[in-house]
Length: 485
Image (cartoon, rainbow, N blue to C red; front, side):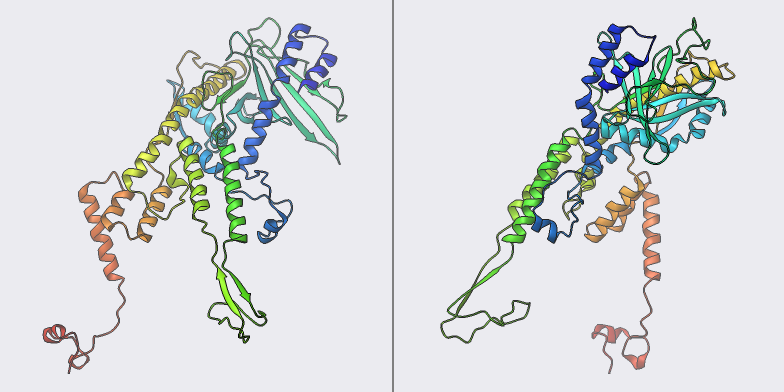
């Protein structure tokens, strides 16, 4: 992005002074490492781990040369947390209904999931708040953090590290065959500057649509002298530690994933080379011999000697693989049951204890992300008052209300019950309690009785038992083992 700022110096005749431009250019040059991390986190989430395989291993795994091989637990770590973050509504007297309408019309029930996933995965994501002149309402758009190619990035000042100086959005437009035009928008508190390279890939030029001034004034009066509206970007920081930027949930998972993939590759290589029994022979030729199940190994030569070398014990490598998975779960406070690396079913108390760390993380993110959502709605309210019908009280507090994060999802409960059923490790009563933790003892007892009655009705009729002329068995016959004369 340093080339962008240099081009801005060439293209922009007015605006910020040269000292500030040089400072912004220096700040942008420091963000290359951060952008590379964003790209890496997205690759790892998608399963692109750049693992190295020998030609033989790639052959027996039947992988094409461009296919990745990885044991990818990154989505579990990210999704387990992101799925706990669901905004239910906003409280704001007396405008809660209008905020709910904006939320619904922007389809934020789905878009919020994208915001939360991107924030948890990358550590940073953004929501752009604009005014839709046609629909006469605010428009909310999720923007990924800049990854070195496209996306959005916010630059903060040194003195106040949470006060944005400028937001920069870059993207590419494909127009015509092999014609790619790069675009960049700079969002300041009082103006918006748009640039294009005109598809040349060279110097940037100011860009203005028909009838649009350059730069676009961003004030409450729509021109100079008005009060700046502020940068219309809201930053969602994951794992906020008081810095300008957040931290990805995959920060510690990426090196552990590399270790896990290496261990799995070693395990597969060991299984391929030493995991099978090998046979040896001296004093004869093994012609016509077969080692298929049920076959005999023999040789007619009296000097022949046949033996075998047992395969290597792979338990150590398997344990190491499981240990790395345990470490990933521990480092990220993700329930081990989400990885399901063992056939054993954890007790309800153990599952609750495992979820406690995840719930604590979710509550922390609810506080930080909740504040960000409140800023989104408050900025939308400001635009409604400036560009729309107005009348909203900008001093009224906006509060984010989250959906219940402690109650497990129905799918999670169903999976637990299914595992208990397979393992024959819980009674019908216990499974009903798991599925309906808020039921009373009386409700549970009625449900158990209903299930047992339905199971009794489902027993097929296999005809009358033997004895007593084919009719019902007498008590004497039953006592004698059910055999009649």
